[in-house]
Length: 271
Image (cartoon, rainbow, N blue to C red):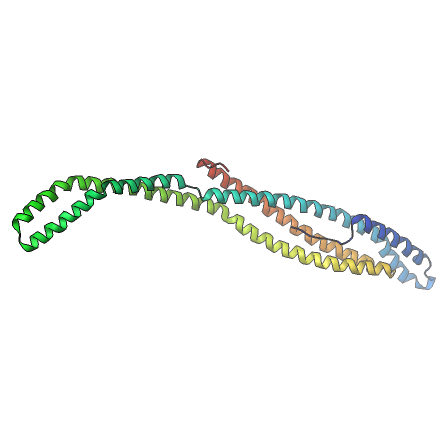
């Protein structure tokens, strides 16, 4: 998640604030006695600026650190997810390929026999229909002679196809199991996107408050300057809260992906 929480660096911001406080202090000491109430409010705001700034800088540092951690976990999880998805496509592929080849070879091997048996059956039916007893008897003899090897051939083909079907069924179940494990990862990505939107909106409001804060300092308005700095801190806090939730989502994804990797490894597919 890339967020620009402020257009001013902490160092520059500190320098501007110190300079502004110095100017504001000069102005404050020159206030007329009759403006005591307003002066008290102004002075209180001025004194709060320094502590507000320290809080802002501390939180800003946490936000920057979270940003780095999020990016590291996000990169790790995306690479892991890519590897897992690549391995998913190979589940059962080699075994199914071998079994399919066996089926094809078995069918090819017994093909001529099955064709011959089928042709004899058709010829026998035609001879019987013509009431050609002699031809029918000869064809019946040939047809019956092939019945046993044909049944054996069909049984072998059936057995090979059953093995292929079982392998496909097993592979489908294994893929589904791992995809079920990965399902929450995709849901967490959706939640991360929503948190990013919230953080971006908070960043926009922070930027607007920062502009008003700088403007208030230029105008010598300590009350407004403190209020806007407080608003900046509040928006930065929202960004930080979103980051914390995103970090939680990424850490959950780490565990889910680790489970998926373990399942793949147990199938002999190293990730």
